Image (tube, rainbow, N blue to C red):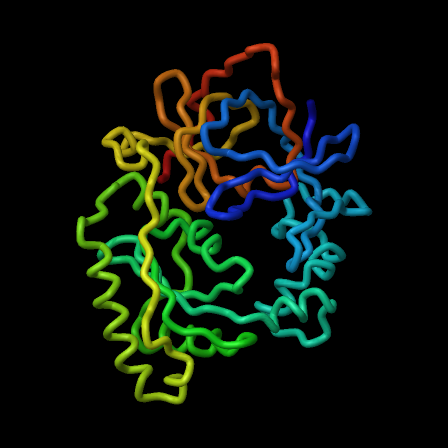
Length: 296
């Protein structure tokens, strides 16, 4: 079977690939956890279409635009139909009605813990409340403020500027943290202390009305492989034109799988827009050294 990969996403705290069977155009979600796979992956990349922000339903690109070598994931037409980038990043008012309704929902402000030296501040829509943190690859997090619409973005930027807490961590840093596997037993206490400092300052600003009296703290439980010593030897694949194995864990953007006794990782979003051919004849493809990204 040949599939066009439309999306890599987290839903209800579970990672999925959204696939379109190329012959029938039938769209399915396939859970990634514990997936045994053997794929040929295309070198070319097509526009994956767009998603309705309210319903999560995916739609194919009507132009089947070739995106090979392009900076962006989808074509301009599908980006406009999605509306997220125009509304959230560029604050364009004239976006589609679905996106307008999405941004009118309640939004949460969060602090995320990645390591004792790596915290992140961010926002998430009520529709994707927990999934956003799983998607980010956080180890623990707290929700501590909320507002209707995008007012929380102002608070996010205030926190980032005053406390030097980044709004973004690079994928390279996140993968290094996965490999180093140095989560302390008191990570929740570290997060609570960071929150106390931030909340104390915000409580004396115009943003105090958005603060929660009781913040919501959570720890994300990792799969066994992510807590093992073996994860330190995990190699990131940059070119995965042919891969197979069994998925042992997923952390944020990274899919961790076993192949011939070794651990490898791929970034799930690098599959988006590509065609995967499922090899159902038991073919097992051993990862070649040329596929390894050696600068991580």
